[in-house]
Structures are given as C-alpha cells and as structure tokens.
View 1 (tube, helix red, strand yellow):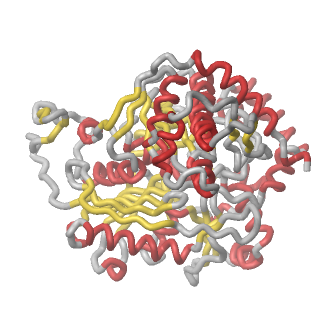
View 2 (view 1 turned 180 degrees about the vertical axis):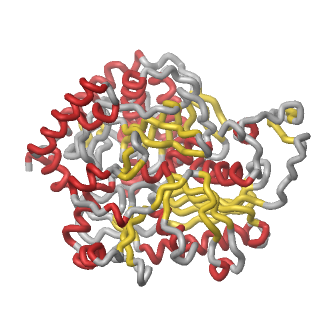
View 3 (view 1 turned 120 degrees about the horizontal axis):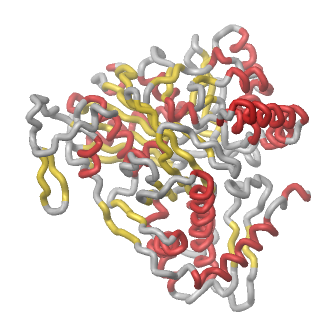
Length: 543
C-alpha cells in the first residue's frame, strides 16, 4: 500500500475541522461517480452509496431471516439472501437518485465463517448457509479437542517450536477447535449430506463463505474466489503459510478441491452480469466484516485497536506484518492484503453483546434499546446483581463453550433498572477482559482505540469501557464501519481516493470518551462478576 500512501500534501487544506482534497498536481484525473458498498451482517444486510467526501448519498437495509430448524442450528436461505442483495443494491442506488452507470465500483463486506456448498454444474446450493453461530458440530469439536490425536499434535508442535522457534508450530501446540470456525461444521456437512459427498467424488462441489457465493452469483458462475481476510477467518486457512491448510484438510478429510482461490482484498474480481442490474458493476473488494470495520476506522498503524459492538463484540489490534500466536484464545487473522502489503490482526471476541440486549428487550425489560442508557443511570449501581452474557458460551480468555447465561445476586428489591444496568456492565466487563488479554499477550503499545457497531451508541457502555480500560476511546459519526471499510478499499483500488492519508481525513469523530478514574469504584463489582462467571462455566457439561 506504499504507493497508496504517497502524499498529496500541499494540495490538502483544512476546512471546518475536516480535510478536503484539491486536485493533485501529479496529473491524476478525478473520477466522476460513486462507490457502492454492501455489508452482509449477522442480522442485517445494508447497502450504501458513498461520494468522494465519504458521505452517504443513498442507503437501503433489510433484516436477514435466520432459520432455526433444530435446537442449536442456525441457517440462512442462500437464494433469499441473494435476492435481498440484489434488492439492496437497486434500492440504495434509487435512494441516491442515481443510475447504475454512475456506480464506479462495488465493495462487499460479509459476516465471516458462514458457508454453504453448491454444484458447479447446476450452480444450486446443496444446503442452506450454516451460520457461524450454529452449534451442530459441538460434539464433534469436543471429541476432537479431547482426542489422543490432538494431544499428539500438541506434543509435536511443542517439540518443533522448541527446535525451530517458528510461531506456526507454537500455534499447533496450543490449537483448540471451535464451532465458530468453519472446520467442523464443514466436516459435519461432508459426513451427513449425501449430495455433497457424491458431488465431491464427481468434482462437482464448490465451497464458499457468503462473499464467495455472492461473487459467484454476480459473475454468473465465472469466478469462484475469496480474499485473504475471509479465508483466514475460516479456521482452515494457514495464515502463516498463506494457503489452505493441507495438514488440517487431510487430518479432518476436507477435500482441497472444493475451496475457492484466495485473492488480494483489493482485486479486480470481475464485473456483475449485465442482466442483474441492467449494467455491469466492477467488483473491486471482498473483505470480512471485522477487518472491513478495522479499515473503515482507519486503524492502519501497529497498535491501533478497533472495538466493534454489534451482535457480538470483536476487539482487534493491528500487529503489523507478522501474525500473533496466542495461548489465551486470541485469533490471528489477516486484516487485508493490498498489493504487497499484508496486515495481520489479533482478535478476541465475546459472542453475546447485542444478543443480550435484544434478549432483554424480548423479556419486556424495555421497549427500545435507546432507553437502556437512562435506565442504567437511574440507579447508582446494579445492587449486587451480576449478568453473565454467555448464550453462546464464553470466548477468550475463558474459552468455555459450555458456560451458561445467568443473572446472579437477585433480590426482592431488584428492579428492571438494576437488571438492565447489570447487562450493560457485563458488556464493558468483557471488553476489559479482552483488552487486558490482548495487551498482555501481544506486548504491542496501544496507539488509538476506536469503537463502532450499534451498541457503541450507548454512552453508558462507552464511558464505562473507557474507565475500565483507562484509555481514550473515539466513536465515529458513522458507526457502520464495515460498509465504509469495504467502500474505502474498493475506492482506493480504482483511484477514487488517493491514499490512506486522505481516508483519515474523511473519517469524522462524533464523541471522544475519556477515562474518569471510576475503575477503583468497580473493583469489588468486577470481583463479584468474575465469581459469577466461574459459577456459570461448565454448566451444560453437568447435564
């Protein structure tokens, strides 16, 4: 990305607190048009049209219908998602008052590790998308993690790391499988869906996460590809060697032939079939949602941290050109690959952030999530009530998929306000856990912390997180950073924007939260909450 970072200094002026670009003196022509970005999240698909100032000219959104055919199973209908995608694009362009020919390029950001398989011949999926939240492979994961073979792999990894000091062997020595990664959900498909088994034998099977499926449909079956950020988030891709892991594929019997080609995050992926939108749109970016949010937040420097609080919380730190090997459950993912520059992130997550808020709303603790901030501040504390946000288990650093969600410390005097405050506090407490784990493990000095996602609009959660981390946290005006990041990458790729310095000028801050030394007041409360965590752990294994 060095060529992208060549400065147009001298041609930039500061106007009302923002940077605006004059035409560069290097002879580059200004592109007339707009950038389209579509973000496929866990619960919502959104489309945005951006102009050169990074402002939204038109937008559209739809709820994604999640299917629950069996307890613990979470699916999405591929055809329905495709139709929603097409509608979103058309509606966003219409809302902007534009024509398709004015769209210069398309960037696509997607939820990660949600996948399907389909026939090369018929181009029809063999089954629904299996969501990253799906738990059908839980027993398979548990059995592998406790197997003798895994102990052998751990032992060999330790020995090879001792001899070579290569971090990829250290990773092998501590690896633990998770249902959130594709690996064993795909193994389950190959073991249980006969159509897929037969298609693999006939070399008629394609695997793809959502980005790959959408690209395949957009190009009418011509391009079967993904990018480094999405591939590295599957759990099957070797982020050290930059290839699909032959070792794990052979170990778990996953055929390498079904996987897509991995391309740069900014890459000419092709153009959409003209019949879809009545005009071909150039596809310049595929990127995973959390990595896209990192780019949208302009976390380009080592030590930059992004906290996305949506359905779950995802905390990422830029670790530069080398992957971080974790012993506490942080995951090394590729942030993006643009040209020759490869950026790695270390990531930790808490799966049930927005999920907990939505659950409380369904229980009628409040009618609108916007009410929760006032409810939490209407009481001085949670009156000793602790909430454990673990509907999907506990992730790093505890890593217990069998933990249960729970309220503890309930009293006859407990009110809705106390319950809501306990829920919001638990989000900030998990942020503190992830942050401390990240700093302890990576040893990377923190540069900036930026937050995005729907839950970050809650000032109580943001201020408490700032207090507990004892760090300044920046909240942007435009909180949907995944879509902005995909647009930034696509726009940079075609020269719509000149360099990353220009992008930093386009990002605007809505509010900065400064720590207020409230950490000491919470020491006892956090101790109680951590005790509640311990009591919630391993709950389901007892039954």
